[in-house]
Amino acid sequence: MTQFQTTLATVLTQQGKEHAAVGPLKVFAQDETRLGLLPVVRRRITARGVQPVATVTPQFDNFYLYGAVEPTTGASFFLELPYLNSGAFQLWLDGFAATFPQSLNLLILDNGAGHKAKAVRWPSNVLPIFLPPYSPELNPIERLWRDLKDKLADVPVITIAELSDALCAMIQNYSQAALQSLTSFPYFVQAVAITQKAIYV
Image (cartoon, rainbow, N blue to C red):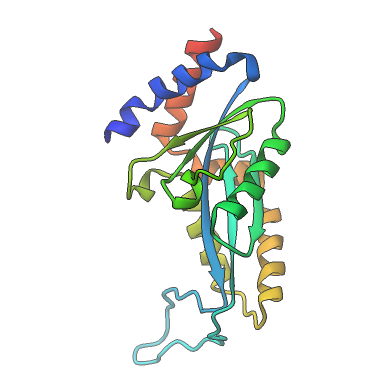
């Protein structure tokens, strides 16, 4: 296990105790992913010697999906935005804080420039906990992005609006149970359980 994995419960507990007055504790995994009209390529089974054929529209139009999932419950918040920068992140962050106003929301996220920009104003009920550099494998929401792009690989779209509509429909079709199943990394869930016990028991 990495140092981040072994010390996560300690970090969460410290933050939870220091800000206990804000509300009950929730721990989310956050990230962004780029989605566009360049084809999502996946393996296909065909007869020997037969190349798979797919309809694609190789254009460079794209947008970004910002999201956070609580791996212990499957609670989530997503927002489609045109850019990957601090301004777009601030829009997402404000919407996230308003969606979970009664809790102290600890956000596990990467070290992207938009996340650490001086211009970002963190809401009083949201606290960042940054992953080690270059460690996407530790972020539970990455499994959701993979599953989502696997599904999008089978959806023929021609315009960015069609892609947006398809994406929205897919996101809405994920139940909380499905999101929990995809993102409940054992180290993450165990750290939250230890934290909850240390704070509330």
